[in-house]
Length: 402
Image (cartoon, rainbow, N blue to C red; front, side, top):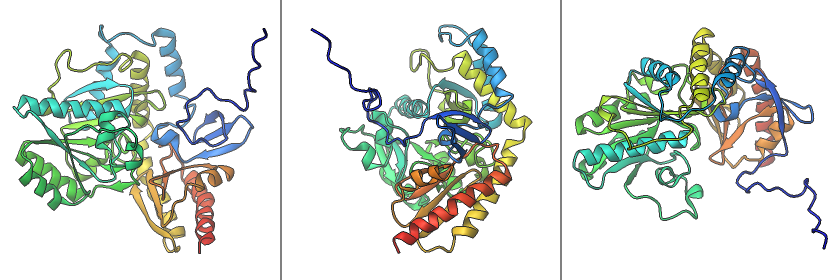
């Protein structure tokens, strides 16, 4: 008997249906531009969701990675990995922290942070430690990070969630003080310095200073998720540095490897609680990932990308406010550096497709917020081009509902 005829490849996918993808397949990129398999060109205002720090095909990064691939891609953490020491030293130097653990993703970095908080609490004799988390937070999609996340849509269907989280509103120090007075098992405060997936909501600098002081007074860990907003995106190495504070625990990922998967959790002395066997990873910290991290930080310094993010990001934000600030249906343009959000008064997911058709890559998060997180090499002219494409699309979209 003949085997049954297989359906045409164009109509059947063997991939799980986990993404609402656009009908675009990218082929290659250069700088802040990418091309699809049909030859169409796009300005990358998304940066792989804040991942492609150096853009695409960076002339200094590519040969370094080619060199490393020819030497050693992966080795087990049974053995010393000298490049881990190099990257850890750099991260500690720019953060003021003391130790680093390397993994592969932001989710893993956040999961490690949660384990650190639990271990910290148990070491202090607290049997059921609690961690303060925030409204609109997003920390990942594992069961623990999903429980710390505040989005009911991504939590739906995955209960029961992990216990031990106490949720408060962002930028409300009185709410946190009430938790301090009422919940004796709290051991840590865990927040994104600028909420990304939740809609580009920045923690105010005075709020961060107040949280730091309260954590010090209560003996809690201050854990700042800088997975999306860190590594130069706001114009400083880490967004919390604008507030002049230092956290105890800082998860990182996304832009650390310029597209090569690299995650890290960096800690101060108080949070250095792991010993052998408490945590681990197979792929995290392998030589290729570490070379990507070392070279990314080196190139960022050489090319002044922190200053570029601050300068070009301000230009971009000012232009968006000028073009859209008075438009009915535009709630707010907010963010810092090259991490910006345009909140609209109604869901705007359709803009993802419309922007792509106009030659611009963006994302829409929290249903109503257009998010821009382009490569940190973005030029002033490219920032202007983003506005030229995006502002008319937003105005037209809002006029349709008027």
